Amino acid sequence: MSISLNPQAVVFARHLIQEGKIKNDEGHWGQHNPNSAAENAFLEKHELEEYANWHLGLDTSKGENTKGRYKFPYGDFKTVHRDGLIAAKERAAQQGYHDIEKAADELLKRLEA
Image (tube, rainbow, N blue to C red; front, side, top):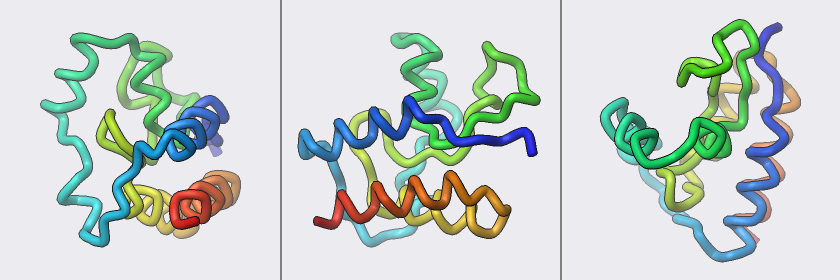
């Protein structure tokens, strides 16, 4: 499998949760997940490394300097979303990425504590 856990994103998410930068929303992640325009606007002002921090998965089959390299988003570039972590956990479980599933679950437990 070419998708693996992005450890720097896990550390970043833990920090955000500790700082209280969370949304304990109960909606559907599709309502909060940044669309392509929001992603591009973020990248106009930030480095790709910062963009990577918002994604729990890293697809090494994609180019290093592409958005497509980063999978399993969990936030809106400002806060960690509860429904984003749930969506990442569920998709990772369905696709067999157990390290990402486990990380999303651990982050979800921290957010809900």
